[in-house]
Amino acid sequence: VFSGILRSDVMCMACGYTSTTYDPCIDISLDLEPNQGGSTKIAAAASNHSCNGEADSSQNCGISTLTGCLDRFTRAEKLGSNQKFFCQQCQVKQETLKQMSIRKLPLVSCFHIKRFEHSSSKKMSRKVDRYLQFPFSLDMSPYLSSSILRSRFGNRIFPFDGDEPDASNDLCSEFELFAVVTHSGKLDAGHYVTYLRLNDQWYKCDDSWVTQVDENTVRAAQGYMMFYVQKMLYYKATDKLVAS
Image 1 (tube, one colour):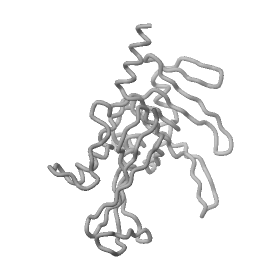
Image 2: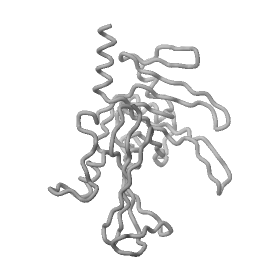
Image 3: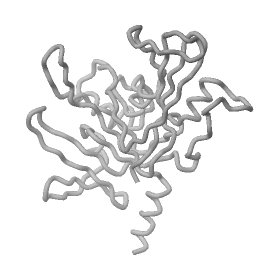
């Protein structure tokens, strides 16, 4: 249900030779975008009104978004000079670009936000309380390996070595939010609460208390983990609930 496959490409900046590896995953850990300068309350207000909680980019509202975090996760990153890669084609160590993408989507995508920071150099740890805007509907196609490779190489007839089609198709790249886990408190002490969507109604699950809430309450929540189910499966399950 939760298992997907990530693709990692390390490309030589001198000749373009690319080393590709695949790794199974059951969730994706995402760094928050750099602080845009807005407070938590201002960001929450913006999400409920000007952006309606469905923004595609942090630039639209000046706040962090889940799609922005996914953009950062899948963008090409130049590795430092101390991380030079031995190129099999050049036969010497070269500077490289590394890029992550999703080879295979799971039935349920779980995103974990890195809200707990640990610095060995500063000898300190802290929790990041910054607000994150997350959409209720999420299109994962821009983050698939096929989309990343098309943007890198353009349309072409013959595939490169290791460039096989994604084990996903357009029909299952649309996802629907159905659960949000939040954390209140600090690093050393806190409390977890889950917001759960059932038959288009949201519920707050707080230990043994379950209460009905509206969408704006969920949008304003400080997301720590978000669970998205393939839209086809979500609506099939909803139809069964209505029928019963």
